Amino acid sequence: LELELYPWTMCCRTVNRSQSVDVVVSRAASLQVLKSRVCEKMGLQNYRARLWSFHAPRGSALPMPVLLESELTLEQAGLRTNQDIVVEQQGKGDRWEGVPEFAERARRARELYHKQKQQQAGTTRGKISGQSPSVSSTSLSSLN
Image (cartoon, rainbow, N blue to C red):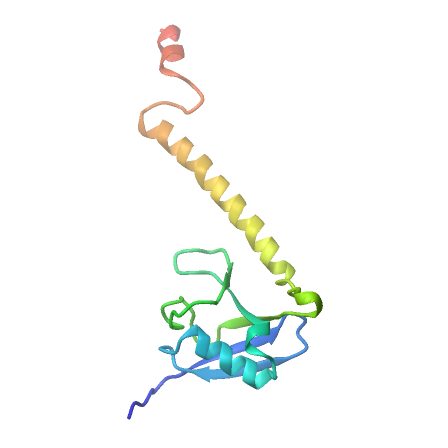
């Protein structure tokens, strides 16, 4: 007999926000168990649903859309209690609804963030070597 004192509650909603359910599950449960419980509560077929997480992983300020389709546990997948989960449904013609527009905004924000980090890294390398990144050592020696 195993007793979990602090189970997690996952806040699940459909892409179009027409349905919303809270699912109480163990942090040690697999993502597949979560998906099965969500589909059961929403009356969806398991194979016609995908779960997405939109959260900022540890060490990141930017939210990342993550498809929750693996055998990891909720804890191993980096989820946390009261996590918002988006349920995407497969519709007519086997087309998926598409993740919310938030996913595209998050992707653009990540690209901008990484571009800025690369630019900062280039600036930092020049400062560490004692040079301005835009001035070469040959141009400095010609000034003397």
